[in-house]
Length: 237
Ligand SMILES: NC(=O)c1ccc[n+]([C@@H]2O[C@H](COP(=O)([O-])OP(=O)(O)OC[C@H]3O[C@@H](n4cnc5c(N)ncnc54)[C@H](OP(=O)(O)O)[C@@H]3O)[C@@H](O)[C@H]2O)c1
Image 1: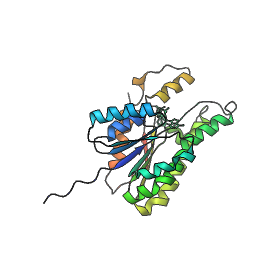
Image 2: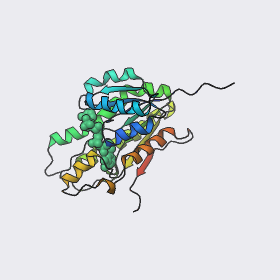
Image 3: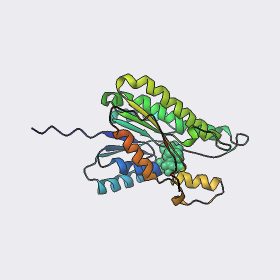
Image 4: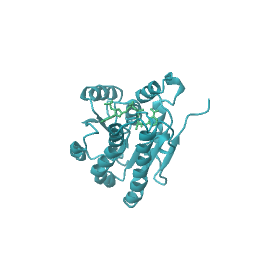
């Protein structure tokens, strides 16, 4: 007698239309159904078409949300995901002496408040499925360098969110992972290089597909481990 195949997990990826988010969608599509979150309906539909072309058996749902509007998140709870990949993020460089409160508020709202609120709303579904919650953090979540205060503060706060949550949900079988990528070749990194007045050579940085493969591994890891903190540093050249 053959046993029934395990149901496909349903995985929410925030910032799915960005560099790492998009790569994660393609990395997971062979064996996950996907909820693709983004701000632009057109960009989400383009991504959905591309995923379905390559993986016709993958179910994709679109979640159009501005992460600056947590008051609009409630509908996401109806989607009942197994796993969450909190990937969306923003970064703007600036010295503490120069960066104004609106940039701080924006950075903390997208990078910390939104994942906290989405987690709160979706936790019952992840707990029911004994799923995994992945936070795409950054090397800046472990070290704060000059010119990076608002972004590093948001990512340090994201690490605190993940660490506290891990303890809170351990009894329900939910795993919580923080990934700390180094510089990765995405539109965010291109914008950062412009702010640094430095050249942008995508080949010089980690490839988004490599980070996505790490996400895939963290979600698929055998249940006898929890990959709590995963540094994804550039390999030696
Ligand atoms: N690239 C790096 O070097 C690097 C290194 C370490 C960690 N990270 C982290 O990796 C994650 C992904 O970054 P990435 O490099 O892939 O950047 P990206 O290409 O700029 O993608 C960022 C994503 O976040 C979304 N986003 C931004 N503001 C939003 C808002 N208000 N509401 C909804 N979505 C919003 C963007 O949506 P739109 O497409 O609508 O703009 C986009 O999909 C971030 O958390 C980042 O901090 C990146």
